Image (tube, rainbow, N blue to C red; front, side, top):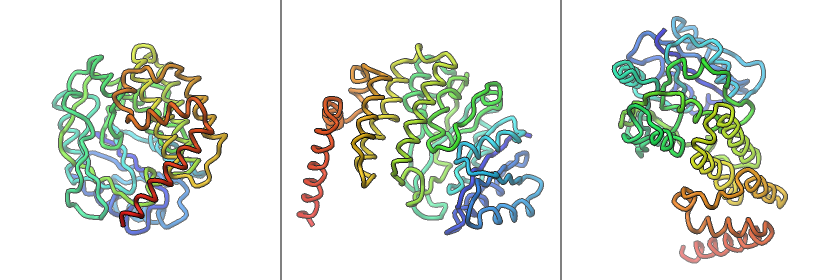
Length: 342
């Protein structure tokens, strides 16, 4: 079996989201592949849709019904348990791909000997094959035989896991799997996978459609999602220590943790969570200082964190109460300015 595509599914029946994904998979131009769809205890018609595809495409479409809800990471792990492919790919069940997506990635991997291959994607708000806003998932400078400099670049800007395929050994020769019961599971393990690759190939073409809608993970901000992001960052650091690349790539790991665990969480929490809790914001800052006491001295911090965010972070490091009061006033002032401009 050349390729296994794993699709975690949870409540994607509405607006034909799941059908768009599955139709793009069953109509791929390659023939030697399998689709493993894992239903994560959906409460809508997702599982019955999957069963229909399994019956119609029994030669390549397989359904696993998880007995408990494990979030995307747990569903992906169930898929990995039965995947037979020499290459492994993942796709979110509300996204879709071009008909030659996997053929193109596989061909580049086989002809170059790469063990990780990726491409670009585009953002779309509608179900169509029209090209939307193109996002360059990686850069040509990251591709080729991987050196320490390229590894550093990939840790800092890994790109999305779902627009890549991986040779089987990168995953199965090691004991770690996706963390379960949390979102942002890809962020937790992507560094470990990338640093096992010897060669990365990159097609600078948008072959993956990343569907934007209100219920997608990136557009939903809750305290639980913030806590999940924090846990994913903790796992990322634990894996770096477990697999022996924490010290060698310390500045990059520190920068990635700072962004994922702290900066993104702090500001998304302050913007998106209605009932803001002092204890949560204080604990976030405390753990950041305990994990990486000198994170503000990291050169990447100055380059990658916006000046205004750095100013607010300085406030937070000095006083959580002052930071929260200042941020509340700042938001109210900006909202007032917006209303006045209308």
